[in-house]
Length: 140
Image (cartoon, rainbow, N blue to C red; front, side, top):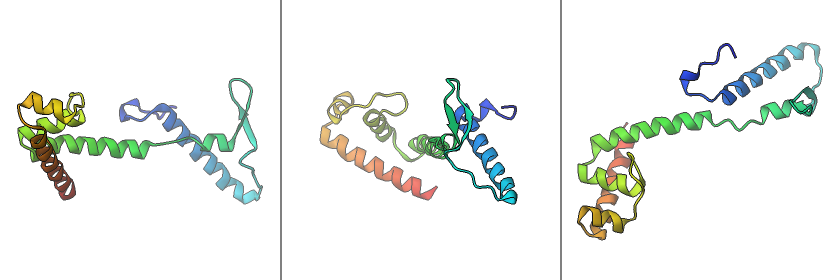
């Protein structure tokens, strides 16, 4: 707990579960010298209600921190590319269609009405803008 830093954007539960997992692994490594077999179902502690807490319970945490970091990085990259790679009209259409930059997702019909263009033109611009973003993502 002393080394937890909330400014790093990591959930406390993810951090603690990783620390516990590392402590368990260190325990196993040090236990190799004594060659004791340990079961993953062996109780190591109890929870607040008095239920047995096993090694498997501590290791079975669904930790998605890498996916979260990757998603945040790609989201930041996307927002940068929206500004750099697209025209204002393309950006407006994608933001309205996919709910980006504070917009609510809208169907093509509503986007077309708001911008005073046809649905088919919205579709063509959207397709062209998405292709520009795909190429820009590949270049970075």
